[in-house]
Length: 261
Image (cartoon, rainbow, N blue to C red):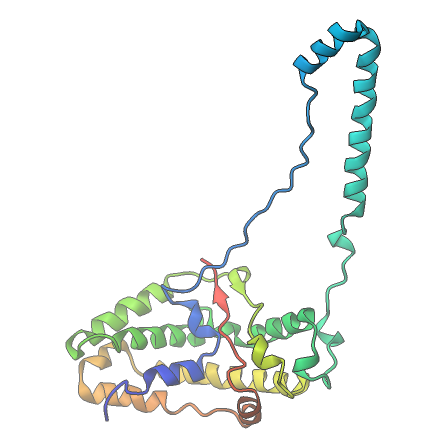
């Protein structure tokens, strides 16, 4: 068997979302902070002095300046009053997303709820402190080993796996929004219930498969028999029945969720 000939395809199938967790090239998403500043223009002193010389009414013009300033404050208050209060916005609850709805008919808020639901099922594969997460790190080691000569595969795998295991994990670092390709979703006739059933089954299958991979180690990549044994384990993954229809009707719907460091 030509080892790793189909490694990348297997990695994509078995760890949708989770593979992004350990990659050194993982996309960093950060929100740009935009500060809106209300600039208040000060009255030019030189212009005031010129006005004073022309009119000789220094005492009568200053109250007009003072009178203008409260109007600026009122305008700012009116602007603040018109801004939406984020505390009053009602978040979409998972139970409020009708299971009979088609994915193509969902609002963006409803899509975000489903993405968060999907991650909740996959979360063990992100955490290197549990076996499913350790198995995912092993996958990353194997993936990096694919790029080097046979004599370097074991060491490369171990270095990559160690980096993945030591990276730490925080739930709040996961960006769950955007787990579906919007162009594909717009044509997808799968229901919410069908999507959630597949998400449950695929997560369970991925967790079990990641744990199964731990029967071998990076050291097994040093020999041809060890590489073949690892390849056999990789191909032991089976796509859940509940996902077959989804993958057929809405191909390339799923997108990796990313992890900020």
